[in-house]
Length: 93
Image (cartoon, rainbow, N blue to C red):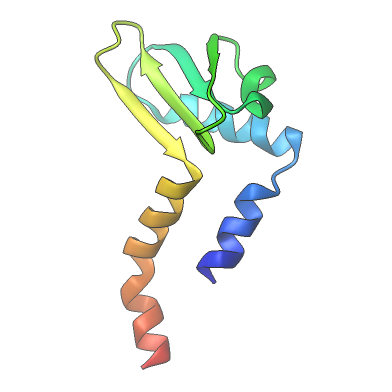
């Protein structure tokens, strides 16, 4: 299940990536100054963008640089595993 979810994240279309980036920017509770991520996200944001191909997903930075919110696919997958680990164990055992 988790590997299928990860595969789904990796296969997002350009439109889905744009919606993903916009939703992430709406979720933070600070003014967004910069977004860092892979080149496929460069057209998805309307703030300063820093390309970093080592990031699969995006990181969002505040104007003062003191805050950062990470929306990388690995972190999302880890959160999903943590939240649903008990559910999966209950089904399997």
